[in-house]
Length: 83
Image (cartoon, rainbow, N blue to C red; front, top):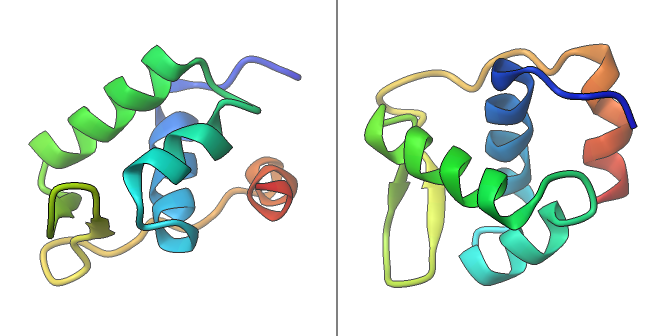
């Protein structure tokens, strides 16, 4: 698989959060395309920039009241579909 840019990783994680709100399941699914360290770093960055929020100890959700979900680039659609 081609290397993903920083922005691609952020978008990928946001769309994965939309599919899987449980953080443990999310990280497990993302292991197919990102290292666990990259997945966790992306989640932490999204929380820090308020694009994602924690609503429980293991539950994440996109903070769509604060910022809109970015458009999904064509190169990421097959990856999201395969998660």
